[in-house]
Image (tube, rainbow, N blue to C red):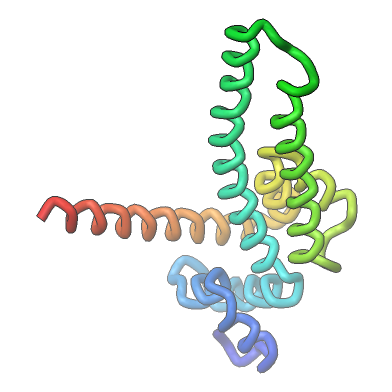
Length: 171
């Protein structure tokens, strides 16, 4: 980090793994790092990236539940010859609960950083993570490059951890 960053920006950057990654990366010039760090710390982009990653994980879990819940209800309806509100209530309640929980989480986590319409769209099932990233990355090519690089770094880090866990079990 160069001397052009304020003390508050440096402290704020030290709290964000994304910002630390950018500041230590060899892929960016000094002026690019300063720009990225200012954007990350001043615009709260680090929080948006974190919420986006939580929503991606949330979508995976919800997808697993949906892939079990909906076929289970179809099989139940076929074998029992019943299709009424009692059968359809669990998936509808899960969907409504999922959307409400996302609304509360996103509103609480990103208060003041995104508009209400963005919160509503991000709360939609399976679309939230991609929408937030697209919304904040589409105009800034340098930030997009930094996020892509960071996500690749995190993916490789997770792969290494998984491989180390499985290699320890074999021994």
